[in-house]
Image (cartoon, rainbow, N blue to C red):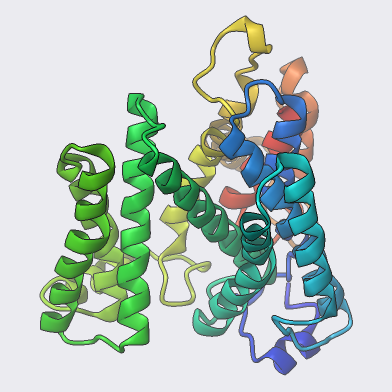
Length: 373
């Protein structure tokens, strides 16, 4: 299905993933997931999670602004009347709900509006034919939320408030991700192409941005936690920049396993599969709470595995072998699970799976999570 608003894409010089609808509705999935989780689990939601949920309110409103401008075929401008209004409203909500100082509130409002807008435009402009409008928004929202939460965790750690193993490991992973992002940003801004410059930059960032701050915050070595994360993600950067000696080999391997959704320079299919299965665990306010005191329900945590792992596999096997009724222009048969508790969510997920041209590995777990949480 081609893009529904070519005028909007032309005026903004965007090139979205070919043969896919714009998927603007995907913009609302991640913010709604966090907001609904906080509303239904206010007791077990941590203060940081509640801050992220209020940030998601700003992301949700900013996404609505993007949807309106898209419907009117307008050029996206980071600073306009509507984004400023959303920024002010979000800042006031932070001050009223959490009684934070105005500097923190305004910065939170900026993160949910201007920074989100900037990342969204950057993703669509620089990664041509990799995303639809909705997928780019979801990725941009995830980046904003990760940076926001990581910043808050670093600030809390400097005050000595993190002591448990879960909190420490979360901090190490988040700072590691910030370091990987710093490498990518520096490689882009400084046009780093040579192998020598890239490896020097990587070594400097690992030392100064990741290891040294973590040593100061934790008073212990984070090396064993970080090494695996760094070198697994660095392979993606090496392949994209074609940095020897591994870049060419990684690119050849990518070409073998890429499918029709991997039209740009990014290998998104395996990333989406991993993210889709694990997203419900990441965005749940308390995934490790298995006590009945909080009315814990395991189903939302399994929505990624159910929709992508089991549902998608069952649809392919059962539908292709025994299915008789197909949607027009699609080869995927709609199947239904027999479990009463999950019937409606599986039914809706099946409908979306059959009709959407968005990446199902990414959107189906969020849809199922929203209905099960």
